[in-house]
Amino acid sequence: MKDQLLDLSKPEAARGDGPRERACLRCKTMFSSEGFGERICKRCKGSSTWRNPASASGGGGGTGSKARSSGSSS
Image (tube, rainbow, N blue to C red; front, side, top):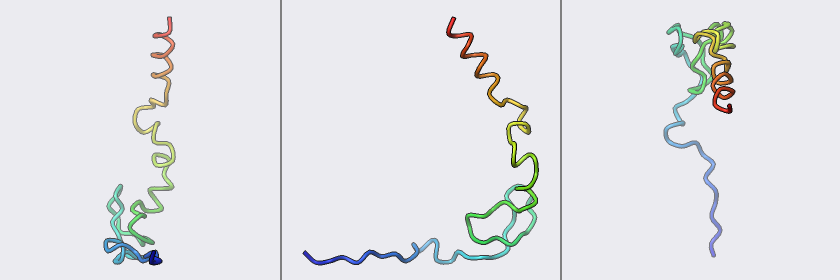
């Protein structure tokens, strides 16, 4: 059986990736991104909405699911 070498090079789609200016997906401001996995700027990541999304969406936070589960177990 012939030994096969494992190809550890980046896939075609990732070869063009690298640090560059990108538009934040939240506020659309241009910022320095380290790669295509970084799409939210530091200002948006530091916001309370980013750190606690439940309060921004109306405060669901799980209290509604607790009320439903306790009501169905009776």
